[in-house]
Length: 236
Image 1 (cartoon, one colour):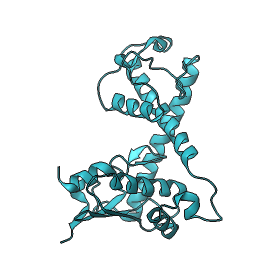
Image 2: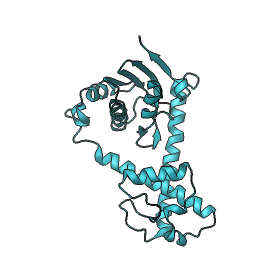
Image 3: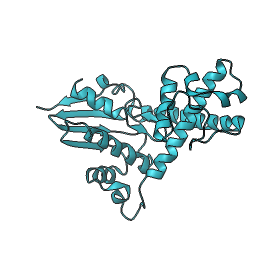
């Protein structure tokens, strides 16, 4: 795998916390420049006013995954066209944390926010997985007997397993499928599924909305959202 491929793969692990999608798929990555062990990446967002805490998480996460590559020496991640770009870029570069990036304006870090979106992502994935079983003929109440091994193979199941891992839940094939975010059994299946559906619809809807905003702001011709579609420059 080339270093460019490694960078793109690493960035694919960074997700928009609200949309639960990779920033590479969302076309937020606009430029990658590699020079030996130095990597420079530029990001953009759908609007000038995207929430600064969400923006900070994506810039910081991108910086972290690239820094963790065993060949990188210096990593720079820059967010463009955002009202708080200067604070976020400077804070991430200085490893100042969120509160350190916005002194006097922010208190504490963003782990609680991150956990909130992890739970929402798990809930949405759980709804998709349960829906796939219902389409195969399972009854709603029967889902309490479903195990992870009952799920069909594919991206939806893989996504659920990743979200369970994020929450510290087991991926044992014989583990119950229908559990709450803390691993306890679901005791009111219809109610849980109704709530899960609202979460999933909300996430999907926000994704469509943000894609539309990004297209309106930047157009679609310049960036395809694939590694071959971004500008990759390998400086001499």
